[in-house]
Amino acid sequence: LGGFGSTAGTSTAQEGLVHTEIDVSSTANELKDASKVCIVPGYGLAVAQAQTAIADIAKTLKAAGKDVKFAVHPVAGRMPGQLNVLLAEAGVP
Image (cartoon, rainbow, N blue to C red; front, side):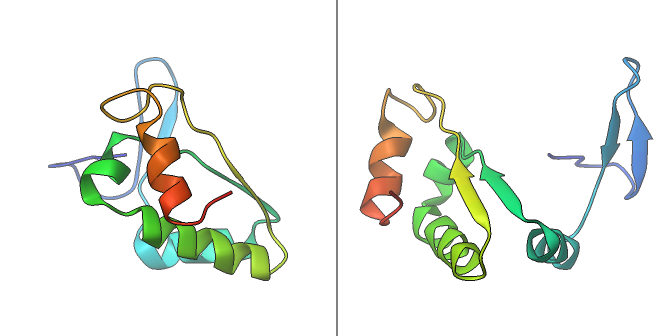
């Protein structure tokens, strides 16, 4: 996530972890090819008010036969339960 000011491609951290930047169309292709998807929303989803967009993505993936799960930290967002409420408002079970 991020990479502001860096060039696109693959980079390796000191710890030996590999980070690869991808664009929107590559992300869409990865989601299309996946059989299971775990969406991990965070504070950025709340700030961007993107709960409806992520709900639409999840519904589209489920309609295509994908196994879609959400992993929400209990205190993600600005207060406990905030993301749960935002996702529930968007119709995410």
